[in-house]
Every structure is written in C-alpha cells, then in structure tokens.
Image 1: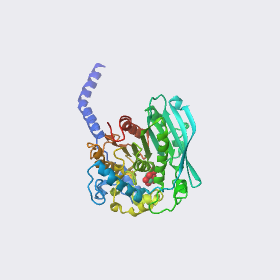
Image 2: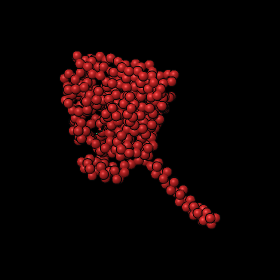
Image 3: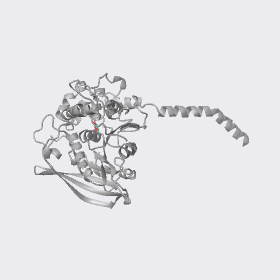
Length: 430
Ligand code: GTR
C-alpha cells in the first residue's frame, strides 16, 4: 500500500509542471481575442456559397467619418454634434434606411385590463395594458405586459423587450410557459421591471404592401422614404414607452429597450429616434442593424432587401451591392445613441450577423461617445468568448453558441445595466 502511494506521489510530482503548463495555456486561450472557428466558416460557406464568411475575403473599405458633416465640416464638440451632425445622420438613416413615420394625427389610450399584485408568487405586480391607437376611424391595440418588482421603495429601472417570436411561447404573461428569450422572473429578481410587446401587434412581419397593421391607420401617399416594418415596430416600442413613462412605479429615465435579431435592429432604431430610452441592447442584429455593411460578411444588403422587402424604406434598395456608395455605415447609427448606454452582442456561431462587423461598428462609434466622456475606449481587438468588454456607457460580448437571445445574454445585459441604469444617468455614469 505504502509503496504504491509513494509511487503515485512521485509520478504526480513529475506531472505537476505539465499540469500547471496546461492550466496556463487553457487560461491564455480563454482570454484570447475571439475569432470565428474555421469549422463554422467552412460549414456555412459550403451551405451558402454566395455569401462570404472568410475574414481574409473582406474587402478593403473606408468608413465615413462620424465626425465630419456631408459638407466636410469637422465636428469638435458635443454641441456641434447635436446641432449639425446628429440631425444630418438621423435624416440619412430615416430617408435611406428605415423610412419616415407619416405625420397623420392619431390618438393613444391606455387601458389597464388586469392588475395582479401577487404575480410570480408575490414577487411582482403584473399589469396588462392595452395601448389603443386610433386614427381615421380605425384602431389597433398593442398588448403590453409589465411586471414590476414588489417591496421596492422607489421607481425602478425597466427592460422593454421587442418580441419578434411567437408571443404565447416567449412572452407568456400568465407565466405558465417560460422562455429564456424573456426571463421575466430572473429580471424581477435583479430589481428591474420587465415589459414586453409582440411586434406583430404593430405590423405583421410579411410583405403585404403595407395594407395592414399601423400602416393601414397612418399611411397616406407612400413614397421611397416611407417607413417600413422595422420603423413601425420601433414606433410601437415608443408607444409602449409612452405608457412606461406615465407609470409612477417605473423610473422613466432608466428604461432599456432590448431586441433580438430583427428585434435588435428595431431596438437600435427605437433608441436612435426616441431619446427617452436610456439604454439600448441590440442582440445579434447583424445586417441593417449592428454590422458594418462595407465588410460584406455574412448577410448583405442585397440579400436582406430581397428576403425582407418590407423591413426598410424603398430607398434602401439603392444600396444593394453598392455598400461603398452609402454616405453612412452602421457605426453612425450607433453614434446616434450616444451618450446613452449601448450594448451590442453577438454569438460565436452566428456568422450570418458578423460578430466582428458588429464589434467594429461599436468601436467606430466611440469618437462620438468621447465627445461626452473623453476616456470611453474599447480595445481594438475583439474580446474573448463569453467575456464582455465594457467602458462607460458601451459594452459588447460574443456568447458561445447559436443565434438566440438567452439567459446568459440577459445576465450580461443586466450586469451592464446595474452600472449604467441603476448607478448612472442618461448622460453617463456619475
Ligand atoms: C434572418 C435575417 C436576419 C435576422 C434574422 C432574425 O433571416 O436574415 O437579418 O433579422 O432573420 O430576425 O431572426
């Protein structure tokens, strides 16, 4: 017995340096800047030969400078940004990408159809609010569900999800069906109110020539700048915000809008157009949202215009296969959110949405954030897998796995919100 123990001990002693070495290498690789796995690249390239997934095939490009106006004036202060460049970029994204909301007058009414102070076993109060929009003898109802944590002494910050998945499975307000897509119990446990609406309440996700949804109420003479479906959903998020700011239990200046994929594009546009949102979480939004179009990696403008002709305004079709002619790129959409909090997230297998292009877009929006807080910086290299990078108002992560919005993503978002919403103000952390 004794001899075999001694034998084992001496063996272990010999192996110790090797074990330490392995742990060191493992830690190093865990910290390594993320890059797409060769296997995923090859698999996707094989299945979708017309799209590029190879980093080495990304063309050389020059991004428009967020801090130079169309006429060539350099922007040097937040005052100049807010007065000259921000309105100019907002107009470009309105007329060239998402489309303009018509100025048809409409009425909004809030109807509390249910209030349950004992929801989630007493942890929260549930409010079901019908947001009724009427115009031109027609009306439409957005069904907003909202849980507010109980036993709190002051108005709470909130997350509003733009839900682009079947509501019965993903945002079940009865909580019989639970989904990581909207982990309401977990969000409540962290002291946030949590709200959601189904995007289909505002506009159906199909090309119906804009005959239904909010378009049927507000559209008059459509033209190449008229709003598409993403802008309609973003408008819907703003109508939910109209309710949230009216509810005394919610801290109106601490509301985050969050969305996944097409919902992530919507969240970004809602954040750009509605400055009441203090934080924007755009999950794997990719093309037409968070990734740089000029990289032509994964989904392209041409593909998105063909597959989803109703999402954008008609002018966006002018940029199909002509990315370099766009007088903007998506880093400038992100810049429209400054100085408010912005969290961009990607997933390691979701190369369709170009994780690197999403990081670079955020990175290149920083000169605008720096007008407000000088030392807002991110490393040039991508962060390691499952390792969020944060600085001031901005944050980014690549989660392991497929295209999805998961509890892991939500936890990263809430960690950032703990700083920027709970402790900070809309104009930065104090
Ligand atoms: C894809 C589309 C993406 C993304 C995604 C989603 O088919 O190409 O741009 O929006 O749908 O919303 O899940």
